[in-house]
Length: 431
Image 1 (cartoon, rainbow, N blue to C red):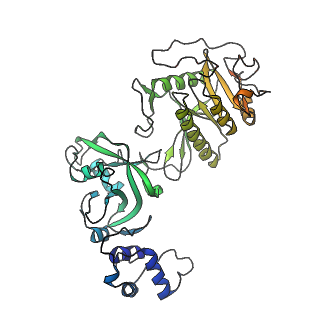
Image 2 (cartoon, rainbow, N blue to C red):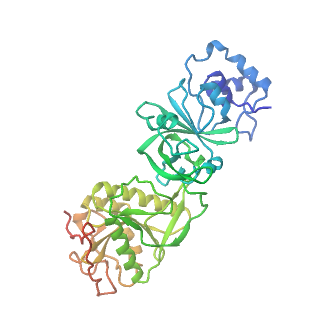
C-alpha cells in the first residue's frame, strides 16, 4: 500500500501541512516517542480528508511541500501538471519550474560529469536532451529565462519513483555555460550546464560536484596552479580538483610556493569536506599550519573576499582537528584599515617586496609567525600605530628586526623579471 504522509496529502488537498498536522493531532494525539513523521493508513488519510472538504481547497494551485519532504513524483505532477518525463517540468498552474536530478540515471547520458554542488554553494545542473547538442528549447529555454520570467526553480533529487524536495533556487551569474558531454552511446555533444544558486534549500541533500564527498580532510602534494592570460572571474566554474587563476595570482602563488620549498617547508593541497561540499585553499603549509588564500589584487573587494574564504577554511580545518592559522597572500599592501581588520581577526598578511616576502601579523598571531624557521619570521615587539591596534608592520623600512620572508638570515632572493601583466614588487607605502 502506498505510503501516505502530510506532504502527500498537502499536494492532494492543496492545504498547508501545518493544518494537516493539527488535524492529525486532534484525531490521534501526538506522535509516539521516537517517531519523527506521520505515516498514515488509508483509513487515517480519509479521516484527514473529511476535515478539509473540497470547498476549502484553494482554487489556485499553491506550493505546499517543505524542504526535505519525500513524495512520489507522480503526486507532484498530479497536483501541478507539467511534463512527467525528463528532468525539467514547466507546469502552468504555478509560477515555478520543477527540475529533477538523479545522479545514477544521469550518468548514463553524461550528466554526472559536470553536475553537482560546488564549493561556492552553487549547483551545476545539466540541461535536458539525451541525444545531439543541447538547444534552448522547451525546458532548457524555460530554465534559462526563469529569473526574467519571475519563476522559482524548485529542485528535487530523485531515486526511482520517489522525489526529495531540496528547495528553491534561482539562476546565478553566469546563468549557464557549455561543455562537451557524452551521450548514451559515448558520442560527444555540446551540453548546457546551468548555474543555480539556493534561495532556501538544504544543499546537504545534493550530490557533490566531481563525485563522492570525502568524510575527512585530504592532504596531497602541491603543484603550481595552471594559469591563463585571460583574467578569470571569481565565479568561474571549473572541474573540481582543477585550479585556474589569473596570471597575477599564478605568479604570486608560484613565487611564494617555490620560495617556501627552497626553505625546506612542506607545501600541500588541502581538501576540506563541509556539510554539503568540499572546499580547498590555495596552499597549505603543512610544516607550520598556514592555510593560504591568494588574491590577484589588494583592492578592498578582493581582500574582503579573501577574509571570508580564509576564515571559512580555518574554521572547517580546526573542526577536523587540524591546528591552523589563516593567511592572506596579496600582490601589494592593502589599506591600513583592512590590515587592522585582518589583525583583529588574527589573519596573517603576506606580500612580495623587493624580491622577497614581508609578513604583517597581529600580536596574537605572533607565536605562529615565530615558529617559521630559517629566518622567515621573528616575533615582533612593537605595533605600528598607523595600521591600527594589534597590527605589526614587518617591512624592513619600518623595523630591521621585524619578521621578513627572506632567504636565511641575510641573503635575499634575487628579484625575478616578470612578464607584462605579472605582479610587481609593491611599495611598503599604501597607494
